[in-house]
Image (cartoon, rainbow, N blue to C red; front, side, top):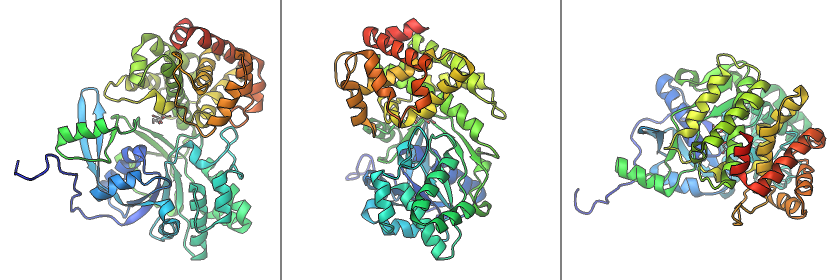
Length: 483
Ligand code: CS2
């Protein structure tokens, strides 16, 4: 090494020509950098097109501060059980931090060259009622955005006001592409944008309803949050520091409804995305099989003292538990997605969970449970109740969530519960003494549990029974008892 040079220089972007910006992406977190951005970068390499990405952080400057010094290049690290592969992704042209200059973000979204606004803003970013999907008009950010067209805060406010600017300028709308784990994420996004629009200007609502497109997607790649240890490991392996690197599993699957404004989109199909006419069956399969068992493992695994998913499923009782969930309670509720074998799909999920190179924390997946439970567990339970099928395992997962949001683990240590409803959940839990009354208070939260389900006697009994056992015997023994 030459004297004076740092041991590990920072990643430097190549001089490759940059496609012009055609996509504005809201939410530059690890999942987007591990999934949508590489797909787009590969599609451009394969088929060309002006599909450079301008990404926007709606809240914190952290990712901008990591990406900008590297000219928005970063490393996507594929972690297989037998080793890692590294690819530098250079498809992000710039990154903005919305609260620093909201009008600049609106201008970028209103640019006629932008054809797609894509989103990875997590479930809570839609400001919708998790149980019903409708826009929360009294959400503070939504109330703010209805009153302040040029300085929005929420993704929905940005989308609406940018569409307004485009209509005023006589420019066609962009396609809004939701890439979050919500059922029917396209129609859901359309519904909340239209709820917002109707509260602002019904004429504009009509224009959006007719001209804008909101394709649904199913997105899948396990991507734990990047840690400093990951950054250090990359530096040791590759000889450069990349503060914006992302770690993910080899598997990826993207199913998209092929419904874009003027048909304009990158050639994602050329690099493995499935462009279909109906995403719903794929989305249900993924939300219920993967995210449903992920949440079950997150709450019960955390309570049992497991730090990661791979650690949790290394415990044979937990592995058996989720296999039973798939076989008896999840797969029987699913319609058949074209070209998928549901039993093989579930089997491959277990293999993916077992990947020891992926350190996906139970605590990370446990986050925002109030926003996740309805589509991951409760819909499946409701379908089973209608069909007279078993709900014991899924009810144990719901009871695990209830114990978890109580905020104290099985050793008496506090749990750092992250959830937009944390205060309400904690109050329901702490305001009651017996398992029955705690469960009843949590079931009464209408943002999470639809009234019909909460009133169902079979469901109430199953959750109360599971919660009582969890409180008395702990998660390990309860899971063991169930299998
Ligand atoms: C996880 C998902 O954090 C979570 O809630 O269940 O992020 C999951 O890893 C992805 O949906 C996999 O595609």
